[in-house]
Length: 183
Image (cartoon, rainbow, N blue to C red):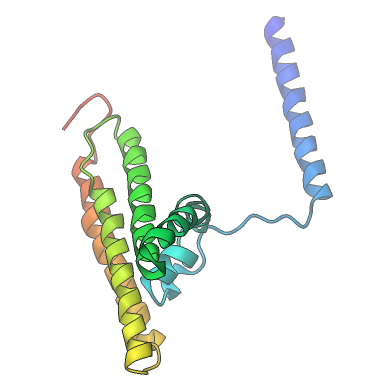
């Protein structure tokens, strides 16, 4: 008897929750979820890929909580250009550490290999290099930017190659190792 009462109240609670969600959704029709990915296969640079096309929610959070405060603080001490470069590297190191923590928990506490952090530091280094090359390319030589027919395959090749090397291979190496066994 008590189980049927519990099931009845659980069902009524679920119906009430669903009705509440529907009412709130109808009251706020202008709110739409932000898509996480924005056509990453069309990225023309590493900056474009990581900043505007891949995991936009995390990118926005990191921009507002790590990059902007670090950039503002560093620009006072080292100048605008170097401040942006160091703030970008700091942001990507924080992102790498966050990924290491997630990877640590997904692998049931296996010792971190720091390959995720290496990926983000490498991406940050090449984003900084990309910014310097763009400045030299456009300001010094007076050339226009690289055509997307060239920049898109270069960007995606770099992201895929480094991701394969520093994400896919480590995941594959530990695949099949359950939480009860350690490598």
